[in-house]
Length: 332
Image (cartoon, rainbow, N blue to C red; front, side, top):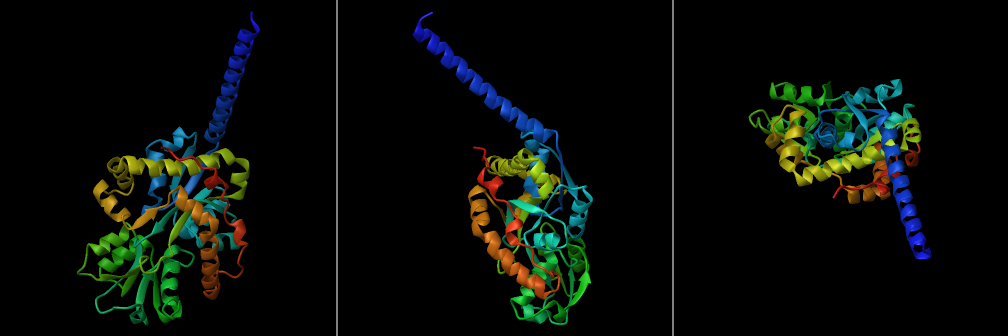
């Protein structure tokens, strides 16, 4: 055997060995993810729909994940995390402040969406500005939820506090239904429930949304213990989210049908509702974790402290981990 031939055989053998090692590592990573059940707490909020798509379209499975999506109300999602029945959850950015301050540590690993009119407050005719809400009864979810924070944020920006209004505690779905039924002066809710009010103009109108008050944004977070033990699964979760966005872009009709079916809507209905928000792609995520999350969290902490919902502000730098976004792969 010539030296040239020997070197060629050796080079080919080394290349094959390298490929085998690479594939073996990839397979090991997928197996590690598949062997680790991941329970994620969500709601019917339209912004979380790419997670539903990743589940129903087999994207999670393709990326070696065994994911269970659980519908858990926002105000009790952290309790499910504390009990161990959830390893991850999707919620609004400011909520992580209260959860961590309450002794339920959870880190944000990917931004899901920003609301562009998908959250808002509906009012009766005759109420034309935020200051007109003084003394009025408003249906809104419990303290510690995004709806409650949205109302507080809007009032604060107009020189008012929650003490200036009367509150009727109702979840987003119930608040919308009660408003349409003629109960209370106003209601705070979000999509898909906000659109039910849009479609009932005889009952009232939308006074303000996140178009005027851009402060609702959602992320997916997991417990530090889960992230430490399952880095491959955490990375696969983030990759799966971006894969779902790629599917929405490539096949919007099919994607909307799947996401709409999860909330008992047609694809057309879902497409209309989702137009009021923006799912966040990789570049937007990098910008978010590069500074936006810190600045917003500081402002949110100030308001939450004034409301006495937050008594001690946790170290904001411990509330997120950008490595999964920075290492994410995006389907072409």
